[in-house]
Amino acid sequence: MKKLTSMLIFTAMLCAALTACGKVEEPAAKEETAPAAETSAAAVESEAPAEEVEEPTPTPEEETPEVTTVTEAPESAPEVTTSSAKEAESSAPELSNNELNLSTIDGASVVGESGMTFTELHDMGLANAFMQDGAYAVVPSDGGAGHKYYKVYTTADGGASWQEGQFYDEPSGVGTHVALDDGQIMSFITYGAYSERFPHVAYMYINGDRVEKVDVGTVLGDTELDDGRLLKDAGEVDFTVDYVSGYTFNIKFTDRETGDTLCDRQFDLSEALFNAQQSPAE
Image 1 (cartoon, rainbow, N blue to C red):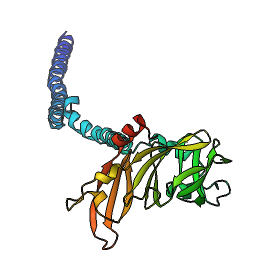
Image 2: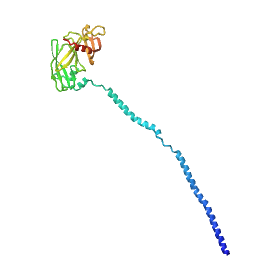
Image 3: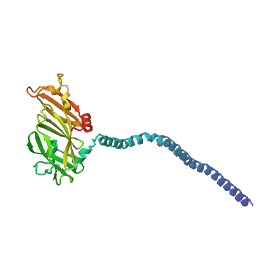
Image 4: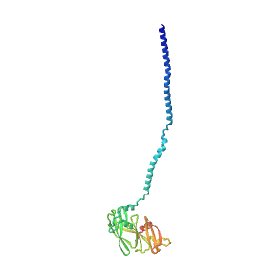
């Protein structure tokens, strides 16, 4: 009985000891898990500052200035180029009808039997283009008492061929001819059959295979010179003619003996030509 009692007591003590040991180990387990929780918290705390340190992602509004700066350069270049092209086009001179007509004539073509090219005769004021591929020329020929004759040639194929027309009769004398931008010719003749000492003016135009004229006459005779005299009273004079445009010419008159300039100015003969066309000389 005593042995049984002793065994029960020993068993009870052993259970109590075991129970006591288990209670002691629980805190140990808790102590082991606590650092892990603290480590996790520390990791969270260490990550938090990292997120605060990161620079915020720029919004589209914040990026706009850089994008605008980049796109302005390519956009402005075409605008300047386009504007320059428009200015070049607008500044480019337009060709007159006469210049277009002249461009259709072969300037190197030899006119008839004259031995001169169309360009050479045009520079002398003795040829002009009056339509596309159409031109005429007056080539100096023989002369007679108070007369000077010209052979008339025309082309309708740009100078590939020239047809001889009727003769043109002009008063003899010192003559200057000017090819006009209307496709015709103006002549200034002095010291000839008219016996004037200043230019006699005539407008020459093509009519079929012949050249006809409008006699503008002595319209320059009443020109007032720089010294107050009229041209028709100035004695013997020489002159040079430079074409301006239309029926406007720059004419310089000089004293034949001294060479002094008597007058150097522009003359618009359009009104005189119009009046002469309305009242042709008989």
